[in-house]
Length: 431
Image (tube, rainbow, N blue to C red; front, side, top):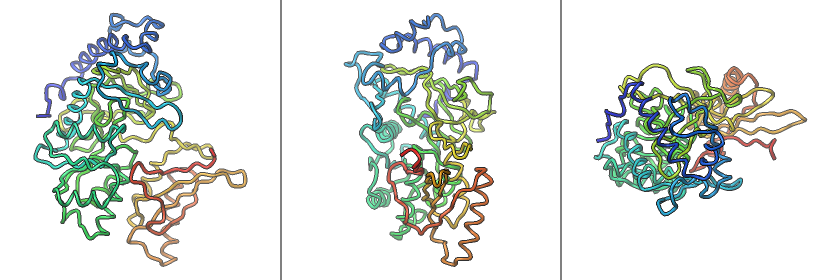
């Protein structure tokens, strides 16, 4: 059973003591890696020098650049023969980031994902279909091993081929999906095009969504289209992959498992801790990883810790819905904004579909934003109606963004469709 009450309901004092012991062990383990050995020696850090969690701040941050600079095995804290799997990023702009796993690490990861799935009501009686890519991408194998650990009948469908996905869902009696938010809406659209009503013709009841930022409005649209409950999942390959944090049935923040990681929220500019409840960059320290522990890893993801305790009874901290990434922030005419702010507005209009594209380019020495968004099946070709709709959407966007973008309503199917992570922004100023 994956309701681990002894761990999931620890008091704050018990959790912090657990983390302190785990941090000391992690420092001892990380000292075996060339990277951390040199870093600890330079800052006089030993397990014995750590007497409270506050001492964590004596340790410098670890960044994605550090992982790339030590590619491929410079971060390993065990001999290579003790590692059984490697995952990596695409590395399209240089060396990829590599994460090594021992057999113990993989078992812990599978347990972590199984705990998340159990928390949202998935059981060994469910048929779980995974639409994520496998291979070096962690979303496939992470959920695969977690679902198997939980005892689900698993369907490793992998990414793409929407009609095949739908056939598997209907033929195998799939009850749960792991799916990217933008692809979930695409899947629903194709279902309706094929005259498959997911509420009538499938057994779907739960979807786990993650891998790209999405708004609450997008989540509600997925739930309405598929007739399911959709739970937000957060993961990253540097922290194993999926399962780092997950919503419970309350759908009020993502529980981040503090028996696996220590959580910090910092100002991405000053690198100082932010006040409780303030949005900042998530920084994570692993405390149970064997092959490649990471200390104070800057995730670049922007969130905050929600105050108070969750009604579900779990005591681990809850993170708010992710605002985006600090390196995804758009600066336009002196205004800082994130794509998810635009999505939040667009998804409120039933006349609009789920596919949109933000293009930023310089016109006559001035940076301009164009937002193209597809109309839904409810659209009309009545020019006056479309004009009023565009005017209202633009007004709300201006109120939210504090600048006025150009808005273009386009016919359904006009914009590119991605079966992986959706491309939402084209910043032509960088070309």
